[in-house]
Figure (cartoon, rainbow, N blue to C red):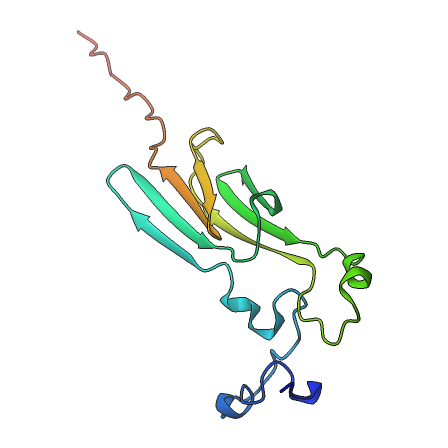
Length: 149
């Protein structure tokens, strides 16, 4: 049975959030609803020579995800577009909860990494990143010359 749309995303969502004062963050986020803050969950594991990150991106394809490294910051962006032409082929739309939109998250990985250092793979809605631990090049020590006399 379909619930009327006056109840929002779920009939009991508002009842079990009591007390929630002030309730200022009730704006609807078009891509994934009011609970968009629970998306792009990330696990970071540290190993001896690298970091491994697992980022949940359910519903996205590899082509909809973009990685960018700029000034030591790695930005993971995901954008989803819905094809509106398919509405006519599939019939009349009663309720549409899937929207188009984008999201991104940024991580500081270090100034001394390049794009070639970071390895990425995407499988079953999870983006796996391998980021090596790379130390900054050391500045040579100043060697003083003793002055005689």
